[in-house]
Length: 479
Ligand code: ADP
Ligand code: MG
Image (cartoon, rainbow, N blue to C red; front, side, top):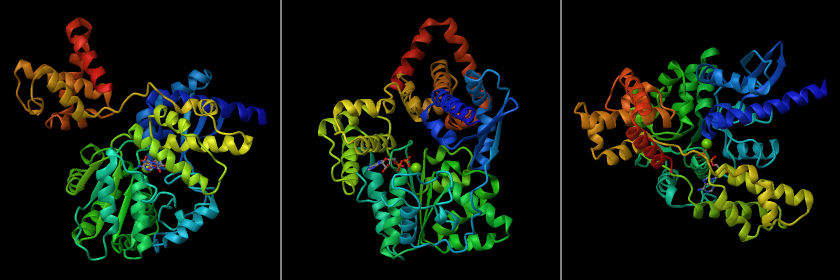
C-alpha cells in the first residue's frame, strides 16, 4: 500500500514536471502550483485545488493538457478529476480583521518555520491569522530588505511614498498599481507597505490577496454578514490587494468595484499588484480597468544581474543572523547571480539549499557544491514573456509603419499585412485571448484576429519570405 502511494507520488511529480515545461513557468506557478494529488483510482487521477475559480479555470483552459501529461506517464489513465479541497479550518468572518501586525508576525513565527509556505499558498492549520480575514504578512518582506535597482526604482519610490503617508494626508496616486512577472518583488513591496503602515500605528492597513478578498466576500454572503464585510473594508485607511489577476466572478468584481470607488473617493489609499497591466486584466469589466489605470501604474522589470547579486547578498546577511557559520564566497554569489536569471524566488531557493546543505553536512559552501545544488534552478532556455506592446513596436519598426497604423482601421496593403503578422504573433507568443488581442488592436472583433492568425498560418507554409520575416520577428521578440 505504502509502496503504491509512493509510486503515485513519484508519477505525480513527473506529471507536474511535464506540465511545467508544457505551459511554461509563469502559467504553471499561477495555476498549477497548488494543485495536489489526492488519489488514483478507477482509472482516474483525483486532483484538488484550494479554490473554486482555480478549478474552473483549469478545467476550461487546461483540462486536455493535464490529462495528456498524465497519460504520458500513465497510459492506462482515462480521466482527471478535479475537486476543491476544503480548508482545514472554517475561517471566521471578516468581522474584526484589523489584527495588529505584531500578532500576525508572532503567529507566523510560531506557526511555521521561517522560509516556509508563503503568502497566498494553501491554507494550513497553522494559518490562524488567515482565519481572521487578513492575509498573513511575512516579517522578512520589509523596505529594509528590499534591494533597489534599475528595474524597480520607481515602484519602490512610489510604494515608499504611500507607506509614509499619514492619516488625512492628501493621496498622491490612487490607486498605486504595480505590475511585474512572477518573483520580481510585487508581494515584497506590498507587504512592506502594509508592514510599515501598521507599524507606524498611523493608519489601518489591510493586506489581502485577491483570493482572500473573494473568499471573505463569498463567506460573508453565505452567512449574510455581507454588510459587515463592506463596513470593514470601508473602515480602513489603506487597502493593499495582491495578485489582482486572480479576482474572478461577477459579484466579487462588483463588490471590488464598489470598495475601490468608495475608498478612492473618500481619499483613502489603495495599492494593488498584479502580473499584468490593468488593460490586460481580461476578466475585469471596463469601469474597473479604467479606474485602476487612473492612478499610478508602474511596471517592475526583470531583475538585472547586479540586482540579483545584491538580493543574494542581502539574503545571506539575513540568514547569517541566525547561522553565523554560514559563509558564502563572493564567487559563489556571482555564479548564482549570473546563472539564475529567472526570478527572486529561485534566488531565495538557492540560498536555502546552500544553507540546508551546509548545516546538514557541515561542509563549507564552495562553487562546486553550489553548482551541484542549484542545477535544476538554472533554466537557460527559459522563454521570455512577450508583451503585445512589444510585438506592435517591433513589427511596426520592421515593416516601417507606425504603431498607430497597426491599430488604425486603414486597409492599405502595406498596413494590413504587418497588422495581421502582429496579431498572429500576439496569439502565438502570448497567452492573451482572441477578444483581448482584438481589443488591443484598436478594438477589433475576435473574428478579425482569428482570420489574421489563420491567414498568416496559411501564408507561411507557402511564402518563404514571409516565413523568414516571421521567424526573425519571433527571434527579435524572444531575445
Ligand atoms: P512576486 O510577488 O512579484 O511574485 P515576491 O515579492 O514574492 O515576487 O518576490 C520573490 C522573492 O524575491 C522574495 O523572496 C523576495 O523577497 C525576493 N525579491 C524580489 N525582488 C527583491 C528585491 N528588489 N529586493 C529583495 N528581495 C527581492
Ligand atoms: Mg506575489
